[in-house]
Image (cartoon, rainbow, N blue to C red; front, side):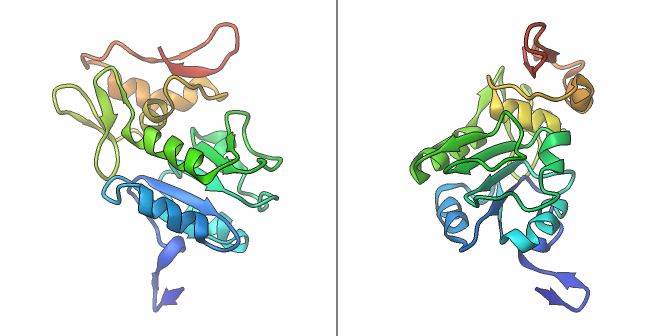
Amino acid sequence: MHAGNVTLGALAPERDRTLVVLSRDGELAVGLRERLERARVVVKDARPDEALTAVGSCWPWPWMLVGDVADLPPGVEAAPARHPVLVLWLGTAPCGLPVHARSFSRFSELADAASRALAAEVGGMRLATGAGVELPGGRLARSASLQALVSAHPARFNLPLVTFTSAARALSGSAVRLRPRRDPVTGWVSLQ
């Protein structure tokens, strides 16, 4: 919906931590809004025809992509293929999602996984209110890739290590010993 030059709803630009929900009826987004702390994540509800715009409205990219549609709308696969986007799916995940995507048969399992990702704490780091990661000692790191690594830990991303440069930079000089590292066997990146 547009009001003059202002875009409202799922298509509005967003700089806070954002979870984009792709569904045909909106019930999945409503359920997640009821379960997740609003101060810590913005839940955007998008239909398949507005999915690409909703994903593109998240700066620098969505923190999480959740859905229940059988077919991935064209172009949506680009964000999780290039960036560390957590992906949770209700039912069978459609073709085009990254291999780190997780599928759930029940809404409660999916919502619990999203809640755990939002509340994750690793090496004294946890997600800050709004966006970023609180480091030990109270410093705030605004790295989206660090948010993803903390949220997904101990899971990994099948992305190039260079994707996590901002996370490594945010952790340099901190008391945190963990760094984004590539597993020598799988090639996947996680905090180690």
